[in-house]
Amino acid sequence: MNKEDICFLPAYEMAEKIKSQELTSQEITEVIIERIEKINPIINAYCTPTLDLAREMAKKADEAVKSGEKLGVLNGIPLSIKDLTETKGIRTTYGSLLYEDYIPSEDDIEVKRLKKAGCVILGKTNCPELGWWCVTYNKIFGETKNPWNLAKTPGGSSGGAAAANASGLSPLALGSDGGGSIRIPGCFCGVYGLKPTFGRIPHHTMRFLGSYGTLVHKGPIVRYVKDAALMLDALVGEDFSDRCSLPKPNYSFFEEIKKAPNKLKIGYLLNLGRTKAIEPEVKNGFLNAVQIFEKLDWLVEKTKIVLKNLEYLDNILSIPSTAYILKPFMEKDEEMFDPELVKDLKTVNTYSLQDVKIAEVQRELIYETVCRQFKKYDLLLTLTLPCTAFDLGKTAPDAINGKKVTPKEWYCYNTYPFNLTGHPAASIPCGWSSEGLPIGMQIVGKKYDDLLVLQVSKAFEELAPWQDKRPKLD
Image (cartoon, rainbow, N blue to C red; front, top):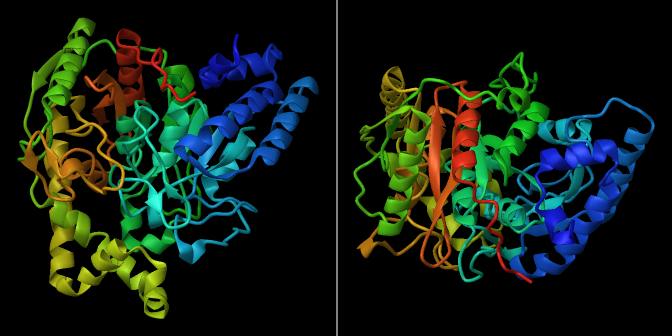
């Protein structure tokens, strides 16, 4: 096996090889470190590499195998952590000059669990300032590039995580998703990104986002669906510090994903709004992918959901609380923040208390609308996004299929609704454009039904694998 093949090896296979010492964690980690040192300067996925720490953790993982200790499910597997998640003793900037020199004194819950599972931490991955944009750029570390086309964005806000994973720089990646921030870069970078049911993975950082935190999910970004299940086994379960956290299931996601469902009724639709701006290649790629499910003898039929005011809700459910928390810092030094972020937050004065309360009611109505679909269907399929990756230097495409779009139209009608509702949703690669850019399909399950989302994702992956494609970065 050559070095590149090791870097792109599924994490679940790495785990077996480390357990048998056919390949040691130290050997795997060193090969990946070598690739990081070569490729990361090109794509800027890692903002804070922790390569010496990775070597220490890999050595400890191998020693655990040799001494016959009980091994964690991720023992010896290298992974990356998004720079919005706090890591003890490791710089965590949130992509903001406000936190440029911040070194947390403790790990967030999910980092503690990953360590307990025996992982090897390669470093922190780049994100936009405070996770605010769906692209990946900030004043400290600059812009992350899409490994499939260096002139394109990898998406965001987990853009560094997805770019690293797609490039063979991180077998596993931990991301976060407050409006599509796992699924958007998963789609643009051609990898699998899962936003689990809200509360499935507890966390207690990102507190500065206030009520926006009720939309935020932490989750895996991987190249193989089974790797997402492996990560979930390490991450799920309630924690007293997160009042929304859910109990740990009485089964292993990794073991149960092997079972394929027999009978399913699936509804598909392009988006959850009225937008007609969809790239033809993206639309065709999605519809071709939908037909693949028919090979599994599942009932697949077209459905329709029209949700209103999604862009407005995205603003009103995030801006007032964030503006309130950041107000004293902005008053002290406004130039510390990105001008576009300042501009967004200053619109807080245009919203009244009544507006905010009405938005909360509208969110509940959206939840009811989506749940009515799940009375008819076991799963929903949508486009992850209506376009492929757009140019660097932009926070949104100017137009889609020749039609001008609003700044949030390109994701608000696809990924964002399931942050409002908390349903599990994954983006899985389902095709490629003529320019060689990935196309994504979103698989959405009923609340708490993360396992079915994984099982169906795995069934699709077996019929339409994508992992033979690798970005050319050498």
